Length: 119
Image (cartoon, rainbow, N blue to C red; front, side, top):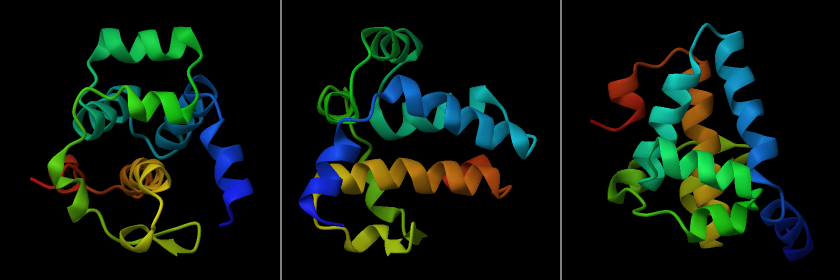
């Protein structure tokens, strides 16, 4: 992905993407609570902080920049999202975005939460 594409993605509002994650999960009989649990695990946000990010309309750059504590186990997330291996993504912000995408994909594919959360 080139820098122009990255910049466009970084500018997406988290509030616009969040319902897509929920819809993807619910189509596969998973829940909003499970989506939230994944976000909390990855970013360190809690329910109140997540709601504030959504209400403020923060973009993905700000959402990840303000994350209280990125989970150190995130480096255990491997695999392909959008044709790219997440562990090989050079841009740190794009890698965080794709980590979240990969976790939501795993949820939608029916993977157990303890495996998704690398426990």
